[in-house]
Image (cartoon, rainbow, N blue to C red):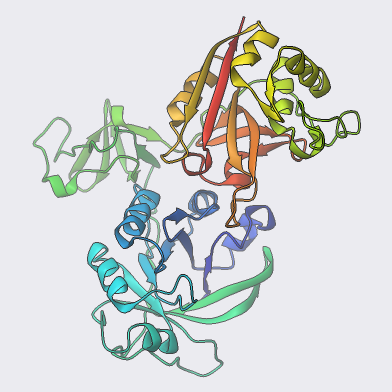
Length: 427
């Protein structure tokens, strides 16, 4: 029996050989959320292990310093439409001073998530809960020991998963891994499925299923959610069979056994720390340089096919800065070939990715504002230039590194981690 691992943003995708690691394990449990924030590598981990047929589960590290319902809602959004054979688990362990979780908050979260199991250790459960609660749920216990059995939180007599070490080593990843034992046989992917398909109805609409092609509609409980991935066992014109006596219109199911070709605009990256301009003062600043603070100027340079120092000078010539900050309204004065300016503020809401997709479809690159280090508490403002899309991921030129990047891999979920959007058509 192989172990199950659990991973989060600490295990960076570029450090994982997914092909090799997936052969070493029986499954993986992914951190979906920390508080109200989706784990920045959740989507990439999910896509990679799903592509290799690895059974997947998810967990939510809940904290006491944020609204409980908001945390539950964030989790629902993160896992919507995903296949999770290993189930969901609420992580009850935070005893830190600022973010400590308390019993009543755990119970409130459990009310919002009635199907989730519990992850905890004996000591954490005692300190946070102080008694027998939720013991009708499956237990994923943490106890690092070489003993034959783990110590269990009060109220439980058995465990479903046992996290027995945090320093495990497996081929395919060079660092430490949490390893878990499991008792039950894990579900095998159906051997006779022809392919998988994703439901592409518009949320919150659901895809009706029928007992036969164009036959009677099945109960609503058998309908599919938008974004859900299903197996297809039989095809007929305009219809797919997704289970015994269960058919759905193929119009609303997109096959996943091929990838849509990526959309890409040919724009070479520029590096803001290039020796040719890194020490040039940015705008009217007396201390801030292009190398340190000129990310937006460099994305404009890439958009225009110019050098950053030229863009800097032309903006200055028309009064296009307030200190070191670009004065948006003056960009089209400095560069009259740019037209139809669109600016979207999405700091307090999810980014409207359809607007980015629409611009890319026209061959227009898009400037987006991100947090350079979104794993830290403070925000470091930064701009990158999105120039393409590959599946659900965006391809961008990042002036901080001077490289072409996967947005999801570097900055996380674009809907969550894009705060402002700016773009122009070019005459």
